[in-house]
Image (tube, rainbow, N blue to C red; front, side, top):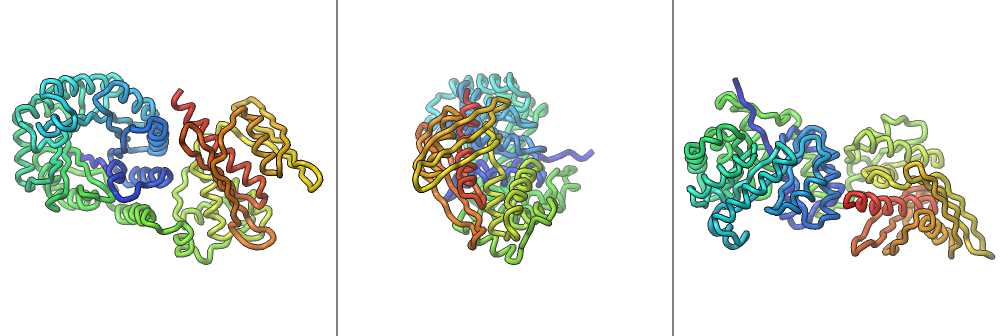
Length: 471
């Protein structure tokens, strides 16, 4: 009977090594594409900045529907707790305990002697196993280790509860047959590996990472680390194609959707091309020059148009975009691709709203101060703010502060016309500062005051959501 070889995609974990990191939105889009591609595991970066990274992990965990989501932890219980709090909502969460097993890395990176490292590995894996059965031990730089120590480390991890053990050729200095022979030796000297999944990873220094992973499969590895957008590592596309075409030879198969692989890979590559400076407006212009919608178009047509300009929307995001589109279309005869892009960016991929806008009334004139009355709801509680200000937007923001009882520094406020003409749509950008971090929100409307209130609430909801995760 054929056995499955799982592919763990490490694009998100490795992307920070590129010149220019992906945005929050791009990471979410990438994780959804990898999920659709059939990656058994999607690996993401761990926690360095608790507030920012916890929100990132929690959002990706919620977005991924089929793949396991794997996050590395340090050899520290507090870090394990922080990662688990962010990751536990995933459908299939995995904790990864990565530890140095080569003398150089143990001494100069972890500052530990071999005995202390063995103790730390066992303790951390055991602590992770108390939270989830899906624990992976990653032996960093395994190919340059003292093999007797490596055997002891792998045994300690398995005894502590690791269900996957990955051996890494971090230097990428082994030929395929050498890497395969190395894995065979470890298996012979660690019989306990028969009870867990053996994984393999290889740097691409010799341009042989793909071949090394195939050699690892022949040696018994059943989980391979590769990347849909490879950066000094194995290519998911190449590895999946080889396993698909020659899997019968090895008595294995892979769950990667090879039929969709090319199309999904192109979408992933477009995310990274956008990272290098191509503006969203340029993509819209290239792909949908003649796209025009109106209030007579249905939800399906609007979401199809959103997909054409590059957005992969969840059901919840699609509903938010449709609602925002209807509000705008009721006041405009036509909506083109650039306007639709602004609507999607403002309405979709937001955090769950803590504060919901119910009504607002603004009175203004040239002989008196502007006054704003705003009603919100938080859960089932009704909130109201009434304030005077120097202009309608100032009054609106002060009324929001009064209604929520929260005051944050307004770091930036921008208004720009998305389109031209008397019924032009306006887009606003609001950035609020809290504890040294900026939170951005965008609003889109033919009513610039309404757009400003929407942008402010978007930023405010991000602050409230993040604070709720750290309580």
